[in-house]
Length: 321
Image (cartoon, one colour):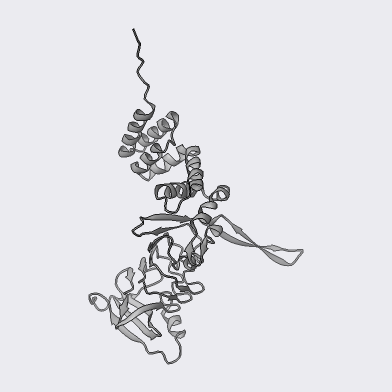
């Protein structure tokens, strides 16, 4: 992959990447300089990126990895970019850097805050997962990135404390004209906007995040609610006893729906997790087993039958003579 960059105070900023693949890993260093920034428009428009360069900027070029066959390279960005991994030294992502990268589905980040420019990830409609190599209590640039992402997205923190998954639901904005008043009224629909405000000084506020759940129940997709509850209980990083109780009560109330979701995902471990926490009744686990059989999820069916036998099998009657 060929990388065009330019020196900035304290490091280098990436202007563009050219190659034949679809996954981009930005190196930690280039030309002996630590990579600290992504230039404005870097992966959205090569022409715009060059037009926004500071006057007198000296452009440099380097190759990362093995040289690729000439004639097949293309500017990586837009529809061609699928996955992106940013290095730990990134401290700024320029405005519209990844604008209209509609093929981008996964982004990898590291610990450390970064200034995220306006519209940096706007129209990245395919982005579904953000991987962060840091504890969930570390400052990151996640809040800045989420400002542009209105669809549902999973943020996965990975560190020695263990993985934790935080789902940010979808939301959308609407402007409605108020004719008599000659003004436009602005409305936000969905709990996702409030979930995205659960940060303090670039650190995810776990208690605030979990506190959104009771309110979100009336304005969030039911499947998303189930996934939030399952993930927070399965990986209970920074989970308070009160929040744990709320999530568990919800899953007991929606046990059949939760089981149906896990069966469709072919997740027998998730079904065992539910059963171990007393979420099922004899009736609900029976109906779940019927669904697993109908969908031919053999592993799920095996778990459900074992759990039903262990927890709800009729006890043999004994008589004292």
